[in-house]
Length: 168
Image 1 (cartoon, rainbow, N blue to C red):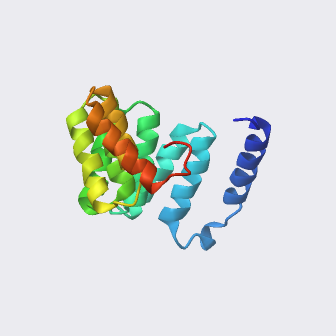
Image 2: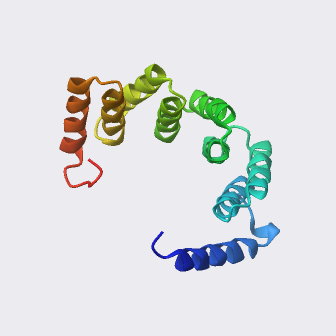
Image 3: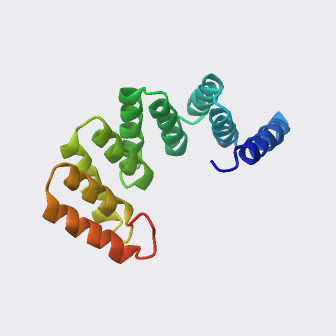
């Protein structure tokens, strides 16, 4: 980032503050562990982040937010198949989870399974027609596959939804 020192200072503050929460005050332990894991992951302490996410899932094995964060961590560590499996588990619990479906689409695209990626992004356009992200993803996917008319149609839809967004 442009302000690495500022980001590091904010991260140190977050680490200090989350570690000051006494165990008796951690009424929502899975959420506490999830948040601490995010701070640990941002500090590149992936082992500590993974321990916390695993512990949170032991306490609340159906917590899709924790699952998605854990899958994100796995993907960041290039454990793509593990991440994919955990995203699938989260989406099996919450079939309309936008974050899970989006991650599955992008991960499928990254592993060169464009047909599966397309299915996830199309599902997202049906579930969330006012979200520009799946249209943009489909546009990129179709461009990579040289399906230019379909790409153009999806880019135009993304632009219609978010005309002031610089990504579109």
